[in-house]
Length: 347
Ligand SMILES: Cc1ncc(COP(=O)(O)O)c(C=O)c1O
Image (cartoon, rainbow, N blue to C red; front, side, top):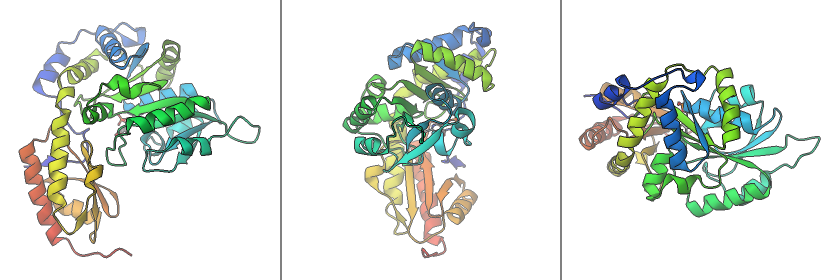
């Protein structure tokens, strides 16, 4: 058996999803004529309560279109620690938008006071702050969900300062499931929102950028410029629609599996896991006295595929293609690997 817990992006389309994709009605989306893409865009805009929405091949593109449209070169984006659209999008924010960033203190989430302290008004000498970027759930913080009150405070401060607000909601669905609220509640106050269909929801590709009509219209041009104008994209959009309609309601299973895995692993003296931070489908495992890359290597020989994010930290992500039985089995394997891992004391 092989259980791949590196990411929720490793899922493969189910037979029913493949059927929906094969049967999709399609047209040329560069002409705006793909009925399935249009249906998905309408459905996301409706669900999030925005005027319009735009399908993109990736979450990276959805984020970068928004940030390009909301800034001018030389302006600044205020952003949380280790945010995906700053750290893991190949420098696109600098290369494509020409924006600077200031990282706000916190665990990826931050306070209204931090936004006020970092804000730079227009001035001939600085990169003026233009956009505030939020990630919910926060990937590198271990799938943490923003408390609603804190988020609303931050957004109110940003609005007062005249900042536009972008939400990287690649895992917005997980945040909504964890809080038991509608996604609309979580996106209130944002100008632009990106959501992914290819992570917890299990589609093979596709994200959607939602926002006001005039801004989305400008993003259609940037999408073409960035090489994201796909023709019969309805085949992919059909996978996204299927995922949205059929897999959103099961995300609680992934969260329960993450809890089970974290609780089992926490029984090992070799690891430290903050159970308060196991809120969705991501678990960060901190190794007390072992090396993450060697644990990852040995785990792979036992059929458990993991990723290390630091010398002593492993990230585990539960998803559609991992059952609760497989999670129990993976926990057994990992506990055995940890028990035998050579002791490497922190320097
Ligand atoms: C929080 C977050 N935003 C954006 C992305 C980018 O998505 P994609 O891989 O589709 O470009 C990811 C991917 O892992 C992510 O975790």
